[in-house]
Image (cartoon, rainbow, N blue to C red):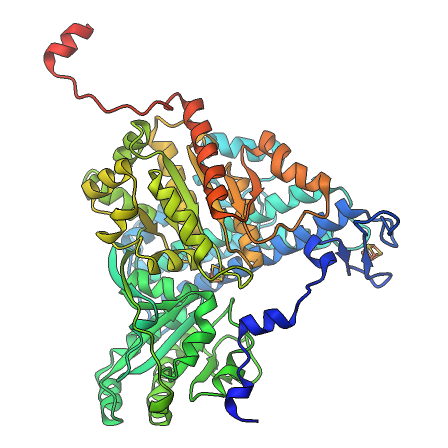
Length: 629
Ligand code: SF4
Ligand code: MSK
């Protein structure tokens, strides 16, 4: 077999899977005990109950809860790793790392009730790390960061009994409830789904974001580039891929080591070029301006450029196919996490204690591999696009109000006067079941054209960056008149890059800042805002969607919807849940109609707030004031 015959890429594998199982798509199959597997027939005459008597409502709800628990655990284990890293850095057990944002550390310490008087930065950091780590094993009470939510929201959660207690506890309880013969009530199962997802958004993910900022710096607007054209033909190209920035930060630092740069030159390259894929890419872009090569569906294609010496991966969203694809080229796939090994990849065990040393080892391996690149196999597409990234909810404060009078006021005022019609969070993955990036791009383009400011994370952010929406000049051409005017005045693109998947917690906090600024209601559910994950594929997306819904947001998903096998559960999630938490789910595959659903929701919220008629802000002079009096 020649090497080209081995190259079966993702689209081909998807074709080979057709037709995919209808029971699986409808989630009406259960494998939770070995009296099964059982399946409920959607057709007349077929079985309507599993062997234990579970019906479609129970089975579909249990499957959804399990998926949300997995999504929560993925984000939260990421948060736990960052908390552990912070503690090691504070104890000086992690050479190469340092605390980059002392201001955020102190703010966090005060919020967590830590006594900082006469304490050194390291002592404070150790304590902050320990308190955050305790949130995972907390058994009673409430997760500390749920107190950041608007008071009205906290009250809703309390009354419904869905305030999360501890991250691990909620995941364990979710798994327990879905064990055969335990929770069989679909509404009660969804109650745990909400509590579990909230422990992700206002717990594990929020800890991940905050402590990553403390360690590596809170992002501020920074220029970057995106798409395959950022690979450099004459350089040693190294791709960082996955989610946790603990290793990629060290790779970036090591790549600037003059000794390694000289070594690369000795081997005939002009230097070392780092690029990112998926959320690791978003993390290093936000803090260092490192270029993004692409998003989830670009990972295999990146190897097929023939110009990648090493792809180093950590956790989540890494395709098992990478070693197989790379065997057709010279690329080495390096796994680094004990939690994520792939047969056929080289494993280099990375820990905070040996991070810099291992980062250098990986870079040396890439440099040594440069000579194995076959020039005739190299084909780098030229496409690349500029973007501005690095928006945290804190940096939005400063951009809008200046460093000394940081405020969200201009944003609220422009929502009230109608120049900005509303805010949308568009996030999530790629899915090969639709044309790569197209649903993200069409949806976001219609939203900004209609004056909706779009906040983005994850692979959706990368898709829209490739389309030019995050270029602060070109992006404006896609925005409606009102939105454009505001963006021009403030100096931001109409689509705001807020980071990686765990950084969806930044969107929760930005929404909370808008509520707290005043004039747009007392709760997130009252804001003219909506969310979407149009090309989602991962269980993490379901957890994110659920914590947004449970925080009061209207959320639309595309591709497929995992409860269509149960009419009752679907009705609950698409309609009835709104009466309880103020947010609800919807499904729509067409980006045009998806945008319409979001705009309709935004307009309804504007109407309820009494700001449905856009009005220019009038500046009163003295004569006008006297007249009023
Ligand atoms: Fe079948 Fe019930 Fe066992 Fe599920 S838990 S496999 S529905 S018997
Ligand atoms: S990487 S979870 S494909 S957004 Fe965060 Fe992208 Fe989805 Fe992974």
